[in-house]
Image (tube, rainbow, N blue to C red):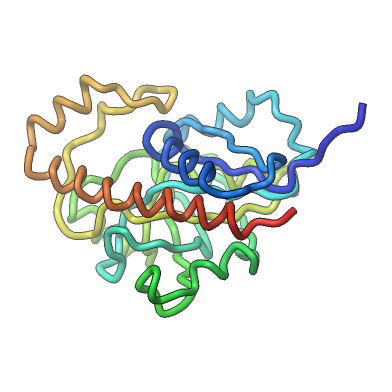
Length: 241
C-alpha cells in the first residue's frame, strides 16, 4: 500500500481555537490531504507529540494556528501575525536552544497582505515567546517584553518547533492576539489540568473572582476567534498542493 504524503498539517490547541479553525476551513475548498491535529494547551504538547502515533516522516510542513497574548503595546487585540522567531521561558533546565521557524510561504501569506481586510501595512513577523503558564498580569507582560523584546506570548509553539526540528519538518506560526499588554486577566493558574485541558469549574471560579478582567478576556477572545476563523478560510482558499 502506497503511503500518502501530508503536504501540510495544521496544529491548533483544543477547544474554541480548534473549533474556529475547523469552521473556517470548512468554508474553503482545501485539499483533503491537508490534515488538522488538535493539540493540548501548554507544555503538555511535548508529551502529546512524543506519544503520537502519527508517522511524521509523511508530513512535509506544519502550520501552527491559534491565539496569543500581546506583550508589546504595539500589538492590538484582533491583530494577525506570522511568527518570525520563538524562544522559551520555562522552569525546565533542559529547554533546548530556539530552533528556526520556516519562512511563511508566498501562497499562504498573500491573502494577509491587504491593509483593507486586516488593517495591516504589510506582513507582520512577530518575535514570539512560549511560557509554561498563562501570563495574566500587566506588570509581568511588560517585564517579559523588556527582558526578551518579544511581541507576543503563547504556551505551545516553542515545543512544537523543537519536536519538528528533530525530524526535519519546517514549521510556520500564525496567531491572532486575544489580549493586549494593557490590563490584567483573571488568574488562570488552576484553569488547565496536567494534560493541557481546560477545567470549566476552575475557569468559572476565576471569572467570578474578577469579573472585570473576565469580561476583558471574553471580549478579546470573541474578536480574536472570529479573526482566527477568517484566517483559516483564507489559508484554505490560498493553499495548493
